[in-house]
View 1: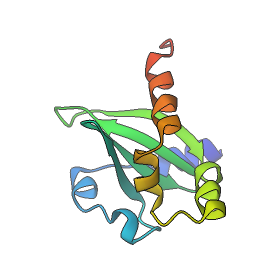
View 2 (view 1 turned 135 degrees about the horizontal axis):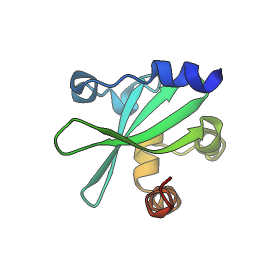
View 3 (view 1 turned 30 degrees about the vertical axis):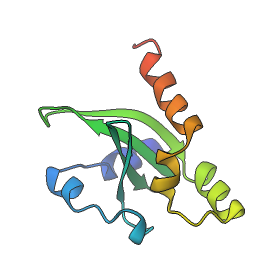
View 4 (view 1 turned 90 degrees about the vertical axis):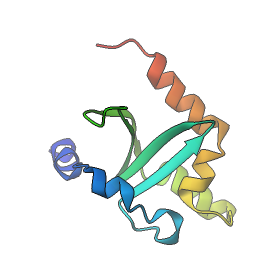
Length: 108
């Protein structure tokens, strides 16, 4: 049931991605993470973070990862990094390796 509730909340429109609040408002549901020309978006829903991209024609959303919110957020809090969650993720080699691992996984 939790998965269905999260998917029910995950509704993306082009307008949502144009007015990203980013790190200024940590409670904003959408965020943007970029590195070397690759852009992912983050959506907060319940206790998870959904990392996704939008296809070039804006007709499809490709979900790369769904992670528990406390995984990386707790790390940032405990280490007192002076940057927001999205900015720290964009600079994290481990985060991008996780995304690449998902891209290279066998599709069902």
